[in-house]
Structure formats: structure tokens, C-alpha cells
Image (cartoon, rainbow, N blue to C red; front, top):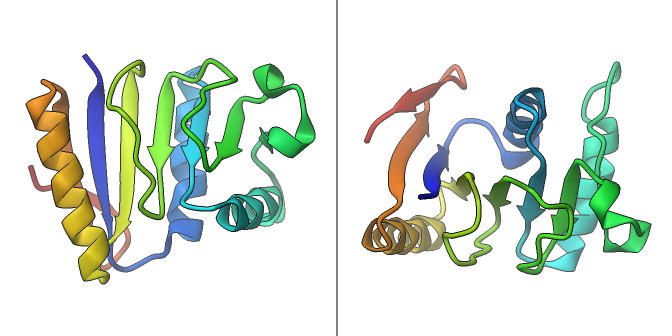
Length: 148
């Protein structure tokens, strides 16, 4: 059964948090798909992952790069899994079925009421499908605290 982790962003934006979670995913030997809410957001994340830290980058690509099966991290606004990822990140309100992955990570902006309401609906859906769900909230220092 898929494990679904909900990350409630409060003190740091997605651009600051996502790279470290992707790094941890790759360290475990897993591949990832990051599903964003739009193609424009995919493009912005693509640029960010090349430059988020001066001394490193995250190997990734999108449909425009070709060879998706060779990408350890694949960025998309669709529901495909062309790189055989074990982990799927849902950002900016993206949604898909909670199946076919070892882990799914739902990241949402806690300052946005619509995003919180959407995450509550996704939580209920994941629970109803029998997934193991956990809820993580950011501390003021940016550490993750398990709340449920």
C-alpha cells in the first residue's frame, strides 16, 4: 500500500524545501516524479533545480528534454510516470490516484485556505483508499514535525 506524506509549508516556500526532499529520495535509490499544477510551474521548477544551490544541482528533466526513462527526477503537469518513479510529489494543487507508488508526497501552502482545503480532501481520499498517511508541519526553524 502506498504511504502518503502531507507536508504543510508555513515558514519556507516550496522552492526551498523541495530540493532537500528530492535529494533524500535519490539517496534512498528511488526515482521521483514531481507533478506541478501547470506547465509554467514545471518550467520554473526545472530552472530552479539546476540553480538552487551553487555547489550542486539535482539531475532531472521534463518532456521537452526527451529520454524520460533516463531521468532520476521527472517534472510534469500530467499524471504519467515515464521514469518508473517510486515516489511522486504533488505540488501546487496537483492531484492523481494514490496508487502505484511506494510513497506519495503532497506539499501544500498552509497560508492558502484553498490549498489547505484541497489537502484535507486528499487526506480523506488517501485514508479511504487504505493508504498509510502522515502529516508533517514546518516549525519556525524549518524542521519537520510529525503531527499525525
